[in-house]
Image (cartoon, rainbow, N blue to C red; front, side):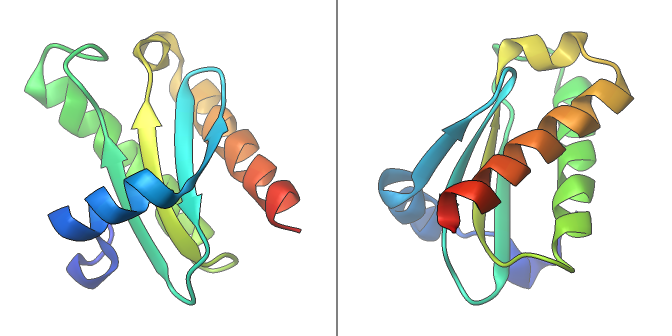
Length: 109
C-alpha cells in the first residue's frame, strides 16, 4: 500500500479521473496527470473479481508496483484493472503494469 498521504481522496480522485491522460494496456488502463510528487489509486471492480478478498489482493499487488515506481517517477496514477487481469500470472501482471507505465513516460516526453 501507499502511505495515506500518497493516496487520493474521493474529490481528488474525481477531479483527476476526469482530466487525466488515459493510457490503455491489454488488461489495465492508467489515468495519468503530471504532479510534483507521487499519488496513486487503484480501482478493481466487481467485474474483475467477484470476491472482495481477490479484489483486495489484486489491489495490493498493484500498489506494490506503484511503490516501486515512486523512486523514479512522480505524478498522479489512477490504475484501473480490466476483467482479463485475473487470468494473468503474477509475473505477467507485473510486466503488463510495467509496460503500461513505460508508455506513460514515452507520452510525457
